[in-house]
Image 1: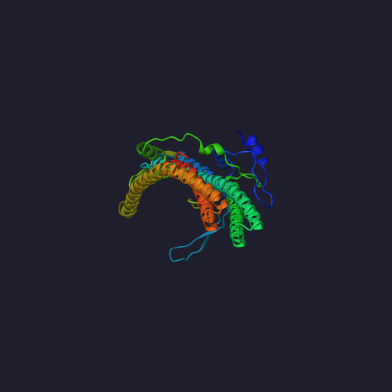
Image 2 (image 1 turned 45 degrees about the vertical axis):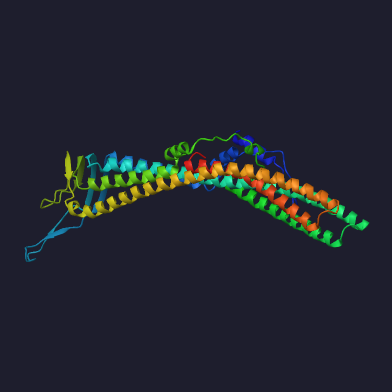
Length: 437
């Protein structure tokens, strides 16, 4: 779906009213939210700008291979001079042409810099790559955050419906109690306690509705969706056939795709390249030089000659910073320590990702077992509720039994909703940890 169609679909979603939440048939998939966040998220935009900045830095480094050209022009007023003996006696005025002018053009083309220019370019490219990995890491973080909001909206939407269903059932029981009270077969205390139950359920419904509003606002703002959009999750997300690859496959994917691991590797490469730049300071610099100069008047003659002197030159320049032999040692030692630290951080990152993948994979498998258990629990709780309701109608159960059955049924239905969501959550957690979200 292109952006225009997506925005049109978003705007067609039913808006929130002042009371209970209404449910629209318009659906926004998680992938569509990811696509919208890619271009509209304010939290992701600085990362893209940082990439542009890094590209500019790389171009600046490449410009180090180009020649340096200096052009200077000067016009001056020259005052008269004087001549004396060495003891400042025998003063004589020395007239000098007052108009002075100068024009010079110098060109220097680096030929050999000890690898400084090449290393600077490679360092800039490595930093640009690291910035791209940082952007990928930020994108993955935003996507996983959006996934959390999205699944929470799905969970609380289902909880809302569970609460509505239980409130409706509780009100029917309450009406039955009132009818039995009129017949003298129920106590007022039973009615009061059940009214308290309904009141608590309605309060929970209000809290769920408020939580949905907060989650929707968080999701809309983070993804950069139009203001006023109400996100309705795609219900098919729970019935998708999720892949069941083994842990080894997930570990391999993490080692190949994790942005945090790629970022740690880039830090090692950057530190090593910084060492090369420091070493290049110990090598001589060689460059081609050419220039042309015209100056006037000629002041080296006495009396001065009121004419222009022009000359040009071409040659090879060699420079060597002797002090680098004893000054660069400390910088090189610091750079080596930085490389060692980056290498150790890479090892630690590798270990942490491996542990995270294992933990997420175990939780992912556990979520399937939890779903089986919660399905059975919900079934048993519902059966127990039906039994207690029948027995209560026949005056064979107490109001406390009814309240316990209602609470057990409600809790089991809530846990079943959570169990469904946990499977999807831990699947996307695996995708996030492995850099495939």
